[in-house]
Length: 222
Image 1 (tube, rainbow, N blue to C red):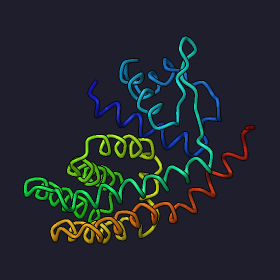
Image 2 (image 1 turned 90 degrees about the horizontal axis):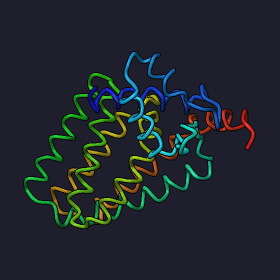
Image 3 (image 1 turned 120 degrees about the horizontal axis):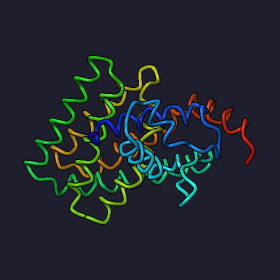
Image 4 (image 1 turned 60 degrees about the vertical axis):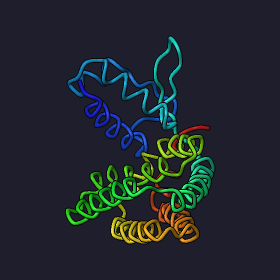
């Protein structure tokens, strides 16, 4: 079973946890889930490991995997930090990006545009993720790139679901165009500001999801 299939399982479980299909602290039976997906335990184990990385699952040795719902404050705080990390990456990348890296970034932006034309939010998210990771990698600071990538992976399920909001993909693409233009011009200030706003806007556009998430949180005891 490929990592791609484990990714599909992860995305399915992400959606179900965020929507409240699994209660906070509920045990995720690896065998039962593997059977329901028609897969072996290996890809299911890998999907649960990836979910633990995003904070939606807690893995307890000798006990198993349990659903976890990050608190609202924790979620907002992570988005605030992500916005600043993206801004720093953008500022450095605009100064340091090579022609080859800029070409790769353009390819990723074009892929996002094709996904937008198809109104395929999941495909857009995957291409969007590549766009952002290329910016991290081109910043010339390995530690910063690792930290930005780590937090981006933790926020992955929320950023992916958020792209399904009406009009968000088109808005995101317009923001990508501004970011790419700044990179081509070597404009560090505009790149930083555009990336900060790009992620901060994602957090602001999160109101409907947060409202749903608050309702889910309210169902379960702290």
